[in-house]
Amino acid sequence: MEFRQLEHFIAAADELQFTRAARRVHITQSTLSASIRALERDLGVRLFRRTTRHVELTDAGRVFAEDARRVLAVAVEARTTVQKQQEVLGGRLSIGTGQYVGGVDVAELLASFCAQHPGVEIRLRQDAASVLAEEVHEGRLDLVLAAMPSSLPPTLAAAPLGSVPMILACARSHRLGQRRRVRLDDLLDETFIDFPHGWAARVTLDGLFSARGIYRRVAFEVDDIIGLLNLVAHDLGIAIVPGGFASITADVAYVRIVNPPVMRYAAITRKGQQMSAASMSFVAMVLNSRALKSNADRDRTRPAGTEATGRSSR
Image (tube, rainbow, N blue to C red):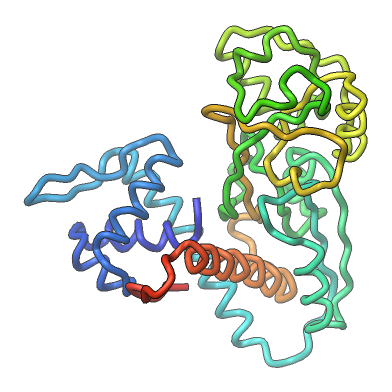
């Protein structure tokens, strides 16, 4: 799920006519339709009922529209706050992150933020997403950039940052190490290395295997990815990890999974409370970096010699 998809969905929900909605966000109708189909696939539900003459929201679409409007409202408020901020920001910014945040380069963003706002004191800590979300709820953290927890207290809001398929990590000498793809059923008799209970990746996998009625033996629990991959490299077990970890140099083989589990990432903040100027500025920077990355990814995949059909509405 991407920020631009929410903008496309809300435009279509407001207009209930895809041609008008496409003009509103400055893209072609085919691009808008493809964006909404991708969003529906990601959510696993139909958001619109479409005929040749009529478009209407489904029940799921009406519920999702309320959440999507709240996410966009936070983004607009963040941009407005940043644009109005004339004085040098001060105060403290307390951030929680996971070990991987769905393609968001937290270190790069923090370096850029510190260069722009040297008067802000940064506090950063890393933990399981569920633990960090609870600290936002309690007011001990301003925001969290991490995997989406399995459940959020009603006091918290989550702005989607993207999703990443999970992949298999195994020793190069392992029987699956030379495969291009594997199925979950290929892993039935394997010993697993995983993160501790309560970590988002562990919750995702435990729920997936449980739903399929598959017993999974987790013999090693590790709270850092380097330690986990080191155990995998020594063929003590296999692991299923977010695909972004494949960029880590380690003596392991990464193998794609057919119909893989997916990790979703979000920026989590408190609802109904005015965020500090520093927090709003940083959230705006994060959301803008995701929008720019989405545009860059589309440009790289556009055939050479063609022109863009429209401009992104950021």
